[in-house]
Length: 242
Image 1 (cartoon, rainbow, N blue to C red):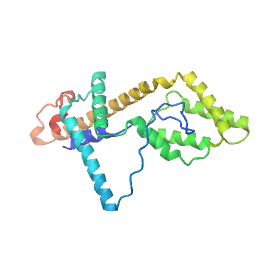
Image 2: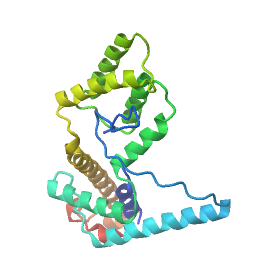
Image 3: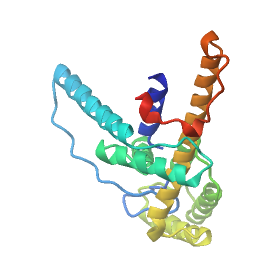
Image 4: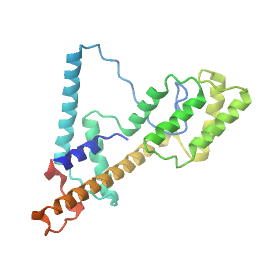
């Protein structure tokens, strides 16, 4: 059950960042927008805790039910296995009403940066968020964005504030140029999200494989199992462990 618990934990993880320098259609590092829900009415402490517990319980049971039906092959080197695992995770996310990785990133950025007044601190915070989440800037977009900010601030002869509509328009124009240079298009956002989810699925399968091997190594050290050969991780049917 410990192994299946780790599987469920990984399947629930929701793992790329995109600039949101103004409250308008954004640019540079893509991520899909999602609508905010209205704030729920105020609840008393006990009732709030009860509702949270019931919500988490419902999500957990939904995830378990799906994992008991779907076949998962622990083979991070097999694109078909990675794709299947990503589909299972997406099904859990959709049925349990969980955020996608893109939505989590967007939410993190919004909450961490809503009170930041200047563009420079904002961009530095985006970098900090990216690093903490273990994401890589493979395109070198951050350096280009900072260069663009330097150019704009040199032109306006002062630090760029996010409330400065004229200055922000200049920066957005520079970001459009970066998008063109990097080949980033708004219509490709779904493709970027899919690529991100597949990377996450592969990383999770690698962790599951590691966990499975460690569990088998530990079991093999026990006297009653020491003469048994270790099975291929790919042959494991996780449904038998849930």
